Image (tube, rainbow over all chains, first blue to last red; front, side, top):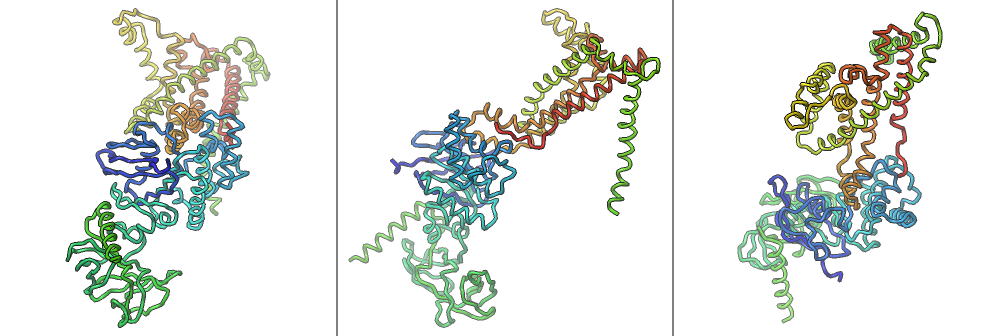
Length: 370
Length: 269
């Protein structure tokens, strides 16, 4: 039963005043997982959330909830609850009444409401704050009230619209742990919207990367980090070196004026491609021992590592994260494994990408066994 | 030094308050303590407690209440609708615009509209409903008063609605509340401040209306305002007029305190 998707978007398009916000989006959400919609502002992630919550209707396409089309069902009749970006707590009600709001609307009995509200407040570590006014609560506490107010209704899906963006860095990191923990304890589906890639990588089971109203890539945090499908994803998720290159043949790629062994396949020969190497995969060594020579242009101390920028002979810029110090202006060698090279095809869709990946991986393992 | 500069800037304000607020009130209180022969006494206040004046007070309150109530009934939905329109500032301006026109002019306009040979009766006639006496009735008095006071009711309510965070409405819907429950539990409580301010702005001046009572209601409706005017201008009994004015001022102050914003208005529902 859990295998069936709880929410399904079927070719959903959303337009506002003739402007397309979401363009033919289809995806499935499974029960009990932590999903993140990740993308820059204006990419359509909040619109997806509002469509699920019922604050807006799709222009085209359908939204299914547990197999039923819910396109026209108003927000107050949907079994989802939202934690809003600005929390949207009712300023005229105290903490207790804010949390009790949904239950009072459902006309629960007083003792039941009391028990349920207390339980929800205990869940978010806010026992004893019942009679506080919202104006007396700090940002982090308001956040918890907003979560308690949503989960007290026992929704099947909890929608979170950039709930951490108003908090300071330390509190934000703390809340990331708490939210992940909360999701595990409740066992319900979380759909989390953010533009912060670190948040997405840290918390999610599954990430949807969005840009210009289109889902660019779907996958686990490691999939998306290690194998970005295109330049946008590679650039948006983490830091990366993206340089132009050419596939000589499968598993052999040319860039920065040299050929390198790699682990990607399924290309036509001499196909122009883009190469991604993460800065932490580059290791500094002596110029003669490295696979590549770069001249150090600048160096910044970041605390955990040095951020070094250098240029190779072909003029490509290379960003390196290293715990070793180098001298600015010196020539250094860069070493890396074949696995560190990720090759991206131009204009490849997610389906094509997955198909190619499957094809060459199976041929690779098949070849190895014979 | 800054304190001294600030005090310097306060002079015009203080002078104004002294000359046009404090001094007149002191004078009214002073006059109210002298009877028509110019002798010091409390007879004016004694007279005020007689049935005639008590009945007049009751009427004043009753009409002010009706005017406030009808103004609210018209103003709230209007203000709400205004916040949903595209060019709300323009619509608001159009509604507020009539309040810039002299009160007397507007009242005279209604004399023309509601008169026996006026537009309203002409329309009624054409519809076959016959000519009616519209002027000099309670209806016309309340209608014109409501018309004049409505902008003062709409403005504070409109502002309160505008100040409300619209995501609160989403939150209410999200938690399962229907449109009506959202109104009752979120929108109305959050705009109560505006409603109170509007009621104050209508009820208090409505208590002492006199011009409309004379022109539109033909002195059929006699309120405290009319009585004050009569005493000062017709019977020349300044003492009695002042006594009524003192009572009115006290009542207005009480109304303002009663409807004023409490420091901690947040109560458990």
